[in-house]
Length: 281
Picture 1 (cartoon, rainbow, N blue to C red):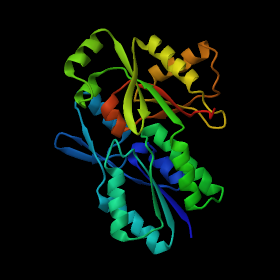
Picture 2: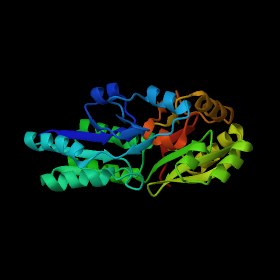
Picture 3: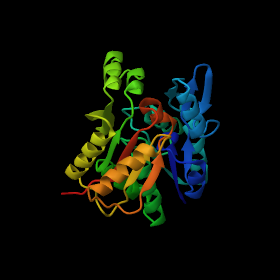
Picture 4: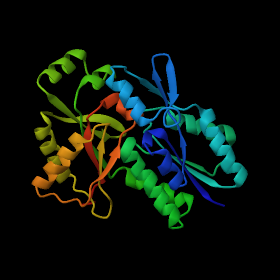
């Protein structure tokens, strides 16, 4: 009996990482006009952002239950356990699709984990599952550990533009136009599984400083790695790392991770951020 680990493409693993870590991935659907693609299958991250730069605005949709059913049937036929670590149920119906597939199959050794996160913070949980599997933990132990860790994961990000928040309906067009006019940089985080605004600053230098201040309030646990995120263009991420170093924050060799189509659709190009596990006080 083995333990299979499955996630969805919102975790932003590359095909090479999926193969190297012996995990499975169910793709989201990304649609540009009449063209629909499977994230990471027939749409690369680079191709997605190239179309985004041309002014095309995409939409994303969750996998159908059938996409999960195939993986679940394979696990059942092999007599394996399967842990599915999926995008926050507050952002997508992916968890519901997986649960429906499990109910249809009637196999109780499938464990569905609502990550309450997406992109780099979501893959943090997948990496933890991989590590615990290698340590010999069973599926129940891994699932409990992931659910306990989820609430300690912090994602803080600054966006280059309000444009995509407006297109996604999170703010009004007038708010976006005014914000872009004064070079306003929104700051976002995950709260109770949803994306929330946690600040606004004029220009990236002020945005860097505010994110650093928020990190002081929720101090990283040194027992876990710190990841820096970016969307397509790394320059703002490098600027943030340099700002932290000027403030005396030393986090070792930076670990950069790119954000893919599922979240990139809503935050656009040029975002920067940091993801870590906060220290228990």
